[in-house]
Image (cartoon, rainbow, N blue to C red; front, side, top):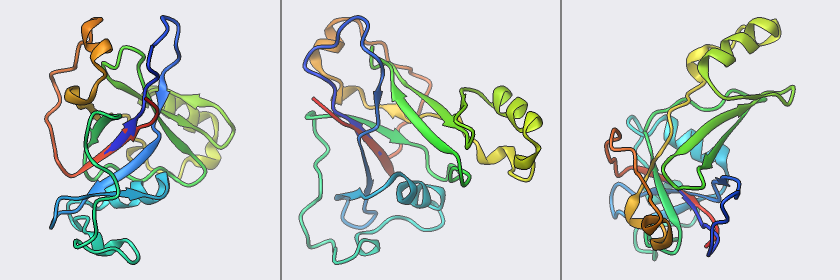
Length: 180
């Protein structure tokens, strides 16, 4: 799961908000544990079904310890899908919350610095850059986490938040989008 902490007011021309924190929920005690990096988070998420996250995966942490972070409305939370592939080496996956909080957009930044916004554009990039042809295209997922509506700021809800109803809620992982 990830969380974004939005500003107190969202200007009409505000850019999207990047993911600020990564967290995973322990399968045994259901406490949220902060994950130190996007890379570590993606590793956990990529194997979540085969290896459910538990507190003991974090050094010096057990289910007896208090949660690292509480799922609450101090930030906007989004729930990620389990078992998405890890971002290929040299690439960077970016998730950006739309300014109306309706959903996130997924982008990849390539080793050349180019931003890729769709599977079609990724195919074109790989075809134009044969040094990346050995990377399976299935390693690039443009699936995005679901925004948890109950954590969207009230001011956004009143101004016409429209959630995407197509997604199903899963409890396993989330992203904390930082800054309120």
